[in-house]
Image (cartoon, rainbow, N blue to C red; front, side):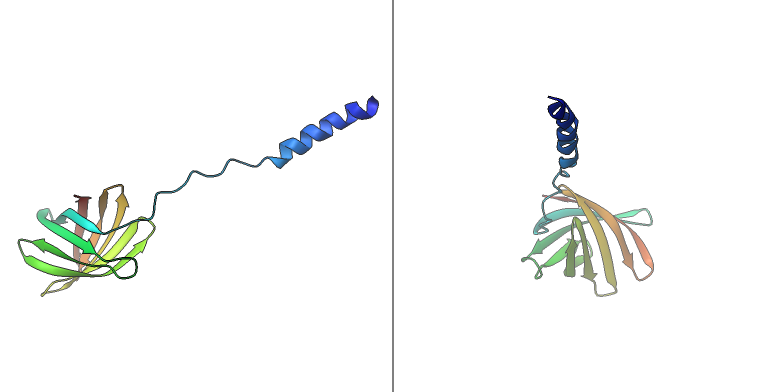
Length: 124
């Protein structure tokens, strides 16, 4: 009986040590950038509305962006988790854009040859 009483704390201790912390919650699903987005570029307080369309598949995305300034290609699209970077090739300059998605929305910044600003967008 004494042995049984001595074993109870050891068994309880072993059970307590064997259970680890709960697994972390699953992260968001992989980002699929394919689709059409309503975008807003803020350049020194001036707003430019645009529509961006992305097509293709992983490692082969392409797209275009249309605004009052015309339609320009979107290239070099890179996905990293929920972040996306891409390049807008305008006739006058190259615009580098980096955004982070939260659900159907994204926000981020862009740089156009030293002049930059903020960009937001929403999936249609």
